[in-house]
Image 1 (cartoon, rainbow over the protein chains, first blue to last red):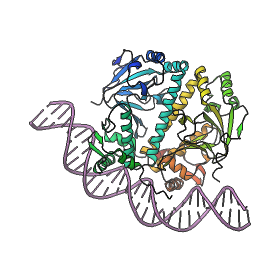
Image 2 (image 1 turned 30 degrees about the vertical axis):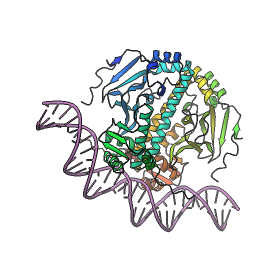
Image 3 (image 1 turned 180 degrees about the vertical axis):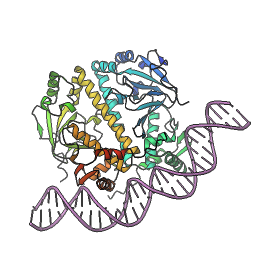
Image 4 (image 1 turned 30 degrees about the horizontal axis):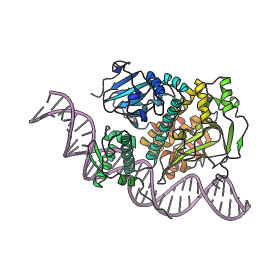
Length: 252
Length: 252
DNA sequence: AAGCCCATTTGATCTGCATCAATGCCAAAC
DNA sequence: GTTTGGCATTGATGCAGATCAAATGGGCTT
């Protein structure tokens, strides 16, 4: 049941409706940010198609030809890298308004897999056309560069997490990050449904699933959160933040 | 002696010489890649200044205003992120032909520190002007996007390293990566001088300096390399590669 | 050339997380 | 309503790498 894969290269579930960035409520978090109304119209023309994915379906796979980047319209994705020797690393989780696929620009081939973790919908943005439009609309060019740069900065944050935090610090960081992103999208900062498994969280955080589970339980014992399976309620945000700044022995 | 810091905000050591991408032997690894002669001239006009740095000097610091990206002309840099609670993570090492500063595009402020690990020189590429030129020269725009994308992909590689490799695998990956980059620059693939300390390597690889040191010693015992302090000679590249693919227990 | 500082190496011990193993829970399928 | 299978929790044990500690050695300064 995992997925029924690549029966058609051009999937049937491509809606030919206009994507209507202008009406999209993720507008302010997505590529159209900062564009004038007429500029958004141009972008709308470019985003010719949406694509719907069922849970478990791949949006793209490693070594797929790169042709477009994708804006998540609804749903939830993960990206992961698979090394030759079988190692598997989740490199990110993407939600509405976030951009997927920039990994493919450098080599014209995708360098990771993108998988829907729930039924999802993306806007398909053909990259050659985006570059054309960006060279005409300077605000779009500039904003696109900012999006890529922020991805680099985000990755540095993950490196810091993986390189220097202990298990509970990693999970706290993860939860606070999710909370903040849900908030930015108008959802509750304190209560949400995890779309990914413990194993996927573990892969992202450089931990084994048992360690993730134990950290969840520990946070619950300490009254910081309430977890039941995939449902999480954060009870004490400052408390979670304090997990991150443990050893302060300032000599001043 | 670490550094004599920010005596002048606009450093004196800015050469007003033309940077002459056309004559630079890093041309093919750097931004000019793929440009025609006349296009390279345009880029040359844009790159108005070079800047020399002594070992230990900062090229930029976290929260510095972002104005330009930098192409390393000669020398060696590290970038690192410092978190509020004092954690320090080296996010990369940069050598000739590589681009520094893209972390600042997203917020107009730099989000990490860049430090010269030896006397170095960079080409200063004012970013606003680069965007202007990129919107006129499509090959430049396209190439710049590729450079950013590759940075993202590189970061994913580091995540995989930090998230799923053991100490010796990390160090082997690191050495092979250096070897490959030196090779691409016409240096020996097998023999080089490390510009960074064990502690900086450790920070980058998510290990303590003692662990790095022990891994070096282990590789030496195994005849894979010869190390003496910062001088490294790789004796057995396939052997180092084999360190990365240890546990193959295919059930086939 | 001498002395100092700091990077590096190496050893001994400790510990956080991985690993191994079993049980429990929930949703979908029958 | 029961079965099934994936996911999650929890416990027991082991080990890789951190931590603590000391000795060595180069490179810079004087």
